[in-house]
Image 1 (tube, rainbow, N blue to C red):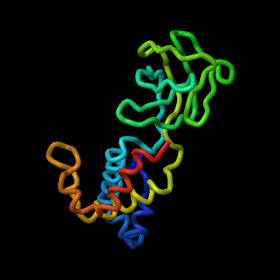
Image 2 (image 1 turned 90 degrees about the vertical axis):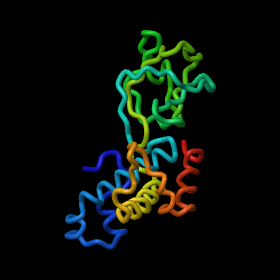
Image 3 (image 1 turned 45 degrees about the horizontal axis):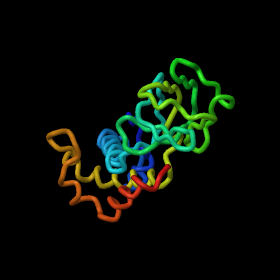
Image 4 (image 1 turned 120 degrees about the vertical axis):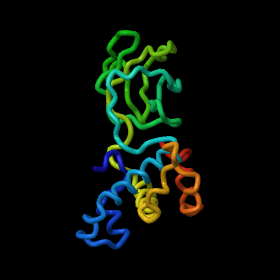
Length: 185
């Protein structure tokens, strides 16, 4: 089953020229390739492109900017878009949207500066992407095509991506994916 992946089994099957029957026969292998391709994109860009729900997440890392904060995923390097805010609590006080704070262009803004105390802000809501950006979808299909052909050599013995992957991934594709680390959000 595909979870938080950037392309579908049908899209990969179409790219590989597989009919439905063959696609179903190779379903496990193709889903593994899609999952690895999606996580490789996360790894290379240091961000994710799916929707993630957070509940009472204590915000420790944020960028104070124009009396606002940008959300950062704890495992990723770059800020992520804010899809929705269910609740925002600062130093134990619940803040009200459109009165105490506003969400604008992936930034939570407030009339006065947010507390700079560590873990003083609690966030509940959704961050990331509702749908996969088209170019990320295309990268995923291209990588999954490659990964479906090279099979188990994708993952190293230590559980990370194999160093030998660079021999299989065209430089232009790897560089295009890396460029997403600075070109998005």
